Image (tube, rainbow, N blue to C red):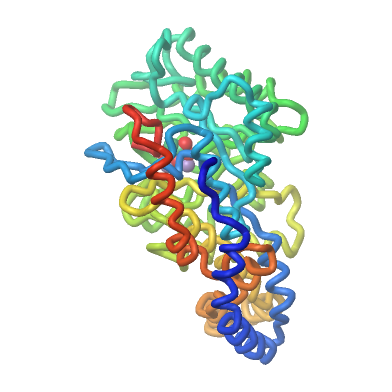
Length: 430
Ligand code: RM4
Ligand code: MN
Ligand code: MN
């Protein structure tokens, strides 16, 4: 029997914190009610929020210099589902996982779907991988995949994406996320527009193979591993591709995939306006695609993104139904702790943005009251909504203090005994 955190242990740990939680909740409730906000309505809103966890995020990540494996890391998709189950068990905000293929390949996907359901998990968007060569692969992706100059290589990459759709269908997913590493490292290495044209030709085949209720999410990224030019480098390229492909193609925003200081919330606003926002890969960054924990470096930026999202939701913007996913690499922390903290930070930004009085804000904007507009937004951001988040977790059967409870459960130590390290484990991104 593999170790699991029991409901009794969870209840006993929560019991120790319940009185303090109730006190904090009431105090915040009084503060919010003076501002005309119902804490109960906010808690109910918090309880509806969900974000998907990436299967590749529960393994220890690394950089191109090294990877320092953590103890008891997941060795395969089965272990990963177990860890993802714990994240949701304690936070109650991550009921789905986003798998990556071929990393998460198994022989029987129906069985995998049932296995996930036993951990109370479902599947979100499936991610294809044509940025690495797999063992036994006929054509190398060294010089590109979906945009490769050689047709046979492009077709191999197309086939992989079609296979991902088929796997996703069996898992109950309804979206395919395509991120390609294609680009060039030297001026003159590649014809910038010819590469984009080849991308369109390849993607059209994938697009046409989408089941009726599916979407394809196009993920842009400024640079890395291509350092001179990347084919789908920015939201402009992504948008152009999505527009040409049709209504089932949308643009996915990975927060780390922009130049430093880019106004990401404005990109989000524009994509919402165009009905083309696919959703997110949440993470935080300081310099590039750092894949740091969401809200750990710049929580204000995360909040401002949610300001746009909540605004769109409340005015029922047409075609607005973003998919929320985390995409992080945990190199120096326990990935379960990082993912729990990140999911809570994302939920926090959602609740904070929900505190904004939208009518008052519009009036300030239209009336040219700059300071008032800014203060309305800022006041929402500086409100500590932690008691609301804890209450939402508690009511959904989660932990008042997920990281504290996880640590005292001894989960990682138990997994270290159960999961002896294996050579070449497929844990996190390296
Ligand atoms: C990329 C991108 C993709 C992810 C890979 C592992 O930078 O963010 O979403 O699948 O990393
Ligand atoms: Mn990503
Ligand atoms: Mn990335």
